[in-house]
Length: 270
Image (cartoon, rainbow, N blue to C red):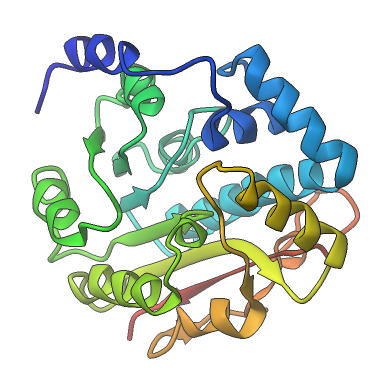
């Protein structure tokens, strides 16, 4: 694997801080520090139209934390493939998993230069486990699987994490085929976790997102709840199914569950 320090330095040179970027805006909404004034301005402009985006961002992160806690705990999963990880904040996949199971092995996948610049932060691991980062595009699932196999044993059950990434694929059928291709490489007993922004729930959110997509920024496509549910076709969907993310097995650390335009679920491969 490429030396992370050298890779980070190379990636840093490619980062354009004069243009807002979706990963840095999301980081800003999560309360992170890995963003620039231009991202804060864009984030504030979005929240002026739809303040609920901050709730969506933070509820999505909490959903991911509860998913990983279940997988590393009750489900006994020790391998995680997190595609489209975005910028590191609190409770990253490896942190949640290795707190519960120090021997967990995690591979992060992203192709954003700023994420690559922070790869060193992601690569810290417990001595018993492993954490690796792949600079790859979700549109190339075969490369993801090839390189991830250097860290993960795909003969063992693995959790595939697709959190707020499939919406970046404009063609829905292609998004489904990529999710299917990645799951096809994983054995029985593996899991698929998906959450994405949903259409048909909050028209104000839809108008805000459509305006953002029309601004020239990298678009993010909202999907209907039925479309999100279809990602799990052929898998055993765990209760409570595909629901607004605050309603997925809420715990004592979550606020009062809300019906928001972000749906997700978790399913097991039979």
